[in-house]
Image (tube, rainbow, N blue to C red; front, side, top):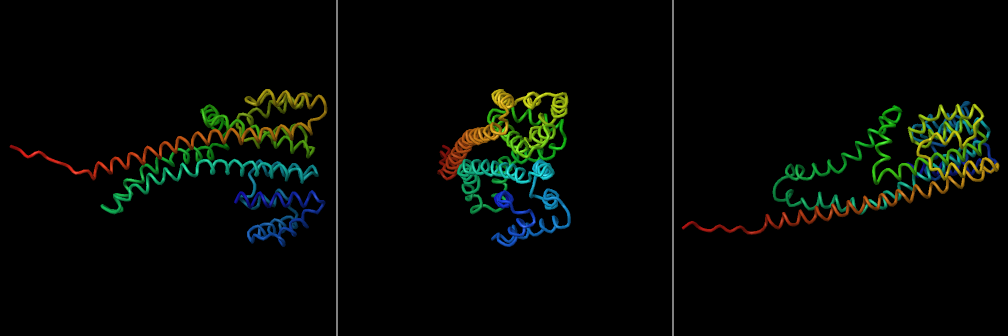
Length: 324
């Protein structure tokens, strides 16, 4: 689970930051972790590291622990001798994901309950008076309509992520939507700056920092701009000049990065900008989810009222006027 992964990387990061070697830290997690699954995972990772694999390679051997961008960040941080910085970056990314998930679930839980109540519970009369088949025929179509759009969008995005042209088209479409656009853009900016900050701390070369930060952002438009950004850096350009090629990156952030680069304070400014971007991403998602929740709440109320009125109409006595 996301919480278990976050706990694993947090504990591992803390142990390495305390000066404990990787193998000893993994052995400690294996022995002292209360969760049996986490203890087993730490033991399997330790076994792979003992056989000569890097920590990133051992983590990739266990599906579901790391996304490919997170694994790449960990790999280059380990190669540069600053593994703890890579672990901090991965931990920050997982913490952001968990915070967004909490806000999403917290805001939509009650409206979704009401919608399901209106669909499932108010149709019980059909189940009692008629049959299970009639009940399923009444409740399944609205349930399918409710889940069809979000599930289809999620599957389409999963399929298109490795296809840059299709992913870019879907991203443009999603970023232009009224409610979804701002959270998507804010989240991409937050993940870009988090990766940028962590890779800077890990002393990763600028070209690799830009490429991995674009990959970690999840924005395919920024991934497509990486080759040109790398060329700018190889010609002697500065980091903010390369990032200026990332369409949609706020001008205020570019200005702050340019000022920090000129003053030689990029290591201090980048974490602050990443924190601000995280807060903005969470706030924009909260606003969007609150509006979606209110729409779902209104839909549930209308569905409930419709069910009650149609039920009352069905139960109302009918009168016929006798023919003369």
